[in-house]
Image 1 (spheres, one colour):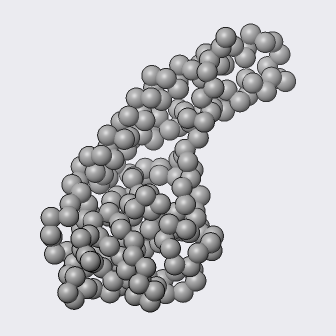
Image 2 (cartoon, helix red, strand yellow):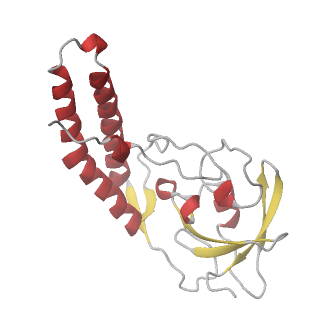
Length: 212
């Protein structure tokens, strides 16, 4: 008997992220060029909200946050409470590893719940678009082409709350996001931006999402 293991569900994955594409600055030099192959560590509270400013997020991103919050409140929280109760029944808590693990898990859950509630409360919904807008803005979908190698990367510009470079979503507050915001999207005469990376400067052409 006892509560089902929930550790795996609570560990928030740290997908490969490039400091150029997220708000983090710590980076390992895994690959000079491909944005998705530069890693940074993102903990469950790395997106701590310090102000009550409205945070831009897409409708899909907001729905994802709400789904996670619902899971944590209705499933993860009761499960960990049950795990703590079960561990207590085994006696001496001073040498009870199961109790310590469950209490640590509870701290992670409650911290994440508070974080998600703050994000949802301050969210400002933006639209993802490839509507032919002539300038990069929040919600824009673009292709970034390495001016030297010709490698291309598809990205959507989003707020920090849902930045995930490994899955093609770059933060508007990241070095790349800041560099491309407001730039003209023109396949015939693409804007070129220069971004400073740990391994040197990289130039990217900004192309529309349907560019050949």
